[in-house]
Image (cartoon, rainbow over all chains, first blue to last red; front, side):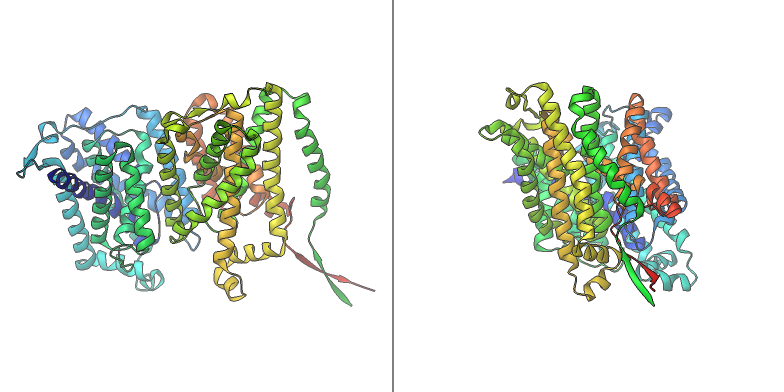
Length: 290
Length: 333
């Protein structure tokens, strides 16, 4: 019984990481109806940049975030304004195909640059430290940090959307792009900002993933799938729903893993399909804002 | 008096028929005059051509941008494995069986993924493909994660025959895909496909069920991909879940269709030739060929969204496979 509790707790914590992956995907879809197929690959790019920073400067991965996050935000802004903005329109095909192309370029570029070897980031003793909750149930310190980061990031996003001028502009564009433009909003710049935020958050996710487990250039697409599942389970456009979606996915995966290691990922996919059958609009549908 | 005439062919398309007949004759007699390597490359090309046509039918005409057609390539390959390992049935019967199995599976999968719209439909199909990969990787009777060899099923068949049969199946699938798409688009139903592609609400208002059109295209495309999957198993004699269900299949379809020209019949044909040429000539650079292809696809999408064939067709008004109807006014005496 307590073993199950432990498994479920791990799953809930893992949900925080998936929410970090999902938030950016949900944001760009909400603001400009753009689904970035290379989303997961950008998170792995961030992990490799962090790896370089850690190796060259000898920084802790957490300190490396101070460099990686702004850098990825700039990358996001530049990619959006120079490449992706021109593909946006009524046709969904161009942005999908361009980001799919980016995904393949990123994966193979990283493969050429860093080889297919598995890498990891270490945070020393913190990596394995855990807090006993009594009765043999313990929760790892790093999973708690991950989950807390997810809550802080989502809280910050919520504040950004509902209490700032930028947030109002983002919501206005999400609701009605043409009217927002008539009100003097420069939507191209705004899309750049949205992608910058998306990349900044997914950079955190990538670095945390690299601390949690090993990574190699080919693992990006799986992150995209988990992010997407968290978004759909949570309900399109719901910020906190994304966290709930991530937690459902996390629990499904850890419970699946504990039943049979080979079927853990499959259990997550099945949970997603089950939600799709039972509640096609997700658990907390709210398609309005991001 | 002015009389209006509907043209459904062009002068070029009528001459092209002769070229096609020659090409088909050349392809089918290859086992007698070509080298083994040439036959192998041609078989691969025809398989890619079939995949590209099937994806183009789905994305270019149905507006369904699937990133999960590898689900059916893999399924078809495993149908071939099951037929080969079970015995009792001629192993080549796996190809039509794979088509049927894929269409049936697509029906069930459509029930799930058709709940998602646009780009999310694409990722949803990808999830299903991943799920299938995990299922087959954990089925130990089919070789599990490391895959399975089906060489034993070809015990009594010589190498020349195997190569020849693979080529003929590939030719049937590749040229058949072109012919099928052409015939579909020229048929009255093809008008409905074009209408849904151009404007879903307008098509619906004229009594076309967009959902039905999309489901039809999804089933046809999936059956086609499944048959190519069986062909791959038969010509490689080895199937592994990671390569059979690899998203690379969709990447190949996507490159061929986008670079060649989406929404045309000639585009995927041109695109498959370009894809395979690039792959062959850049093979020694490892992963760079994929980077170059990815950059090419991004550039084409940016500068010429209708692909190379789109540029050529606009420039000189050439159509090898005219499926549209053009009206001209002619003076009658």
